[in-house]
Structure formats: structure tokens, C-alpha cells
Length: 248
Image (tube, rainbow, N blue to C red; front, side):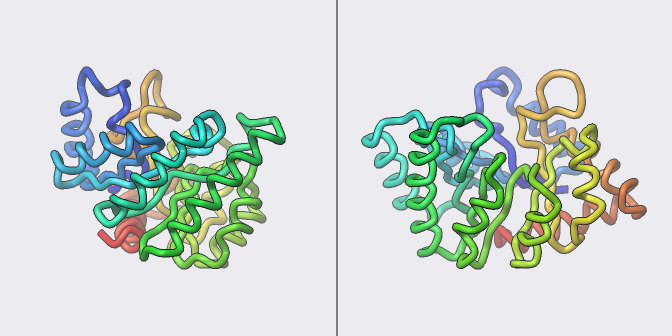
């Protein structure tokens, strides 16, 4: 299995990061895509990727950060991404979040920053990892000209998902699928050649408490049952798709 989106550099793992990674490896997780969201976490995701051969970094600027940081801080993050993107396997997470942001001014800031991220994505041959919450369709309209796109932790409509996969993009299903009827319905209709899986650790745990990459086995079991195929097949297909999209 490959965890296509996690945040192992976040402080929730400070006390047992190495043990968490070892647990994941023992359950069959062979690679991790670790995502940055701001200047500090972009640096620490690189540090983690340097320490562990099976961890790969993406450099991001999340919509929540875009909404609340100053223009100077945003420019610093964008400059850091541009200067270091060649060492990463993708750009993101970045995008639009209308669930947490309700104001017109905040959404306008998110849009402005996301457009700047898209401009960077246009110059590189690496995937753009999108955080789109209650704004999946709006995000899709902005990136249709890009070749390589992943909709991380997808929670939007079935109709928009179909447009995403018709465009040749990938949909990442989080561990939410273990308990969310909506995500289970999405998986039933998601083309197998467009699905990748993630934990979004430390969030969205299918068990009590903190999520971690080892719990990806729960998603694999759930997806296998929903699609009527073997768990090993789910692991193989999603790993192949993740390697393809991130060039691993």
C-alpha cells in the first residue's frame, strides 16, 4: 500500500514518529507522500523525506493558510515552493475551502493564492494536489488545462467526481470511507484506474484517536468489500496509480 497523503511531520507525531512509521511498514505500507501546508511544514516534510527513503515530499500552501497569512508570508511560502519544487514529487496541498471559510474576502484570498499555485504547477511536470472542500467544482474549473492533478481527500459530489476522472485526473479516497456512506457511494462509482488512497494522518481516523498510515489497511478492506474484489488487488491497483501520478 501507499499512503498518498499524510502529515507525519505534524506535532501530533512528535512523541512517536519513528514508531508510527515502523508500524505502517509492518502493516504493508511501503511508501508515503508527506504533504506540506505552509513554510514551516514544507521545510519539515523535506527533512522527513531526507531521513526516510520511503517518504516523499510535496510542497503546499493550504487554503486555510492562504486565508489568514499576510501577503509577505504568502510570498515567502510561494518563493520557497518555486525554489525547491524540483526536489519534491508534487505541489500541494493547495486549493479552496468553502467549508471553513464563509466570507467573500477570505474566499477571494484563497482564490488569489490558488491561482498563483496553479501558475507554478504550469511550469513543472509534477502533479498538483488539490484541497477542495465544498469547492471541488470551482477548483476543477481552474485546473482543467493541467495534465496532472490529484483531488486529495475528495468529498464532493458524484457528478463532479465523474468530471474529474473524465479529465484524466485522480481522486484520493481518505479513511473516511470506513465510516462515511457518502464516501462509500463515491468508491462504488470511482474508476479503479483513477483511485488512490490516503489517511490524511493525523486526521480522519477510522479508529479512536489519532489517525496514522498503518490504518490504511482499514480503507483497503472497506474498498475491497464495496467493489467485490480482493484486498491485495485494491492495494496493488492504488499503489500502481500512486506511483504513476507521482512518478515514483
